[in-house]
Length: 169
Image 1 (cartoon, rainbow, N blue to C red):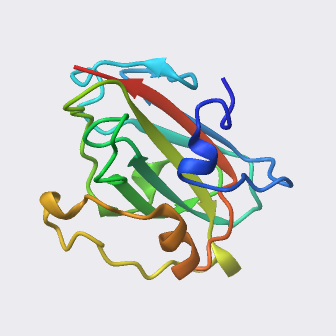
Image 2 (cartoon, one colour; image 1 turned 45 degrees about the vertical axis):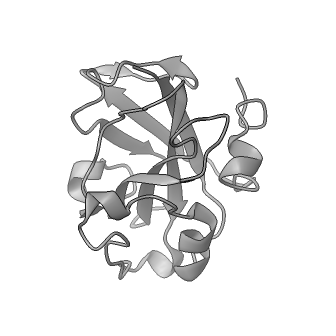
């Protein structure tokens, strides 16, 4: 299933960087997810392992995870719900080597099937990114996050890789 078919484009982003040769591998309990795969909230409760393949030597990346569907995919009035931000992940490395700005919060979809989208951005100038937690550390303030505004505010441009899974109760 493609990004347009899953409506990640246009719900979260406009496009993926066309020149990207970067791959994003996200796995739970040693099993890599496939786009659109159904994963239970229990199986995704702990932070996933995330590995970046490709990218320029010495490059740094920002990883963001968001749910565009809360509370109900048919009426997403809290669109988006922020689930994770990790900055300064090295090229060829994994998220555990980065700076976790917003702690992973696993899926807990209240109504229907939700999309949990991982977006990977190349940081400009291969410099560490100065980011503060947009929720101020308060999980109840993760609602109404805006991926486009976040990326623009930090000069990230288009994501270089995207993957997602679905989850429901």
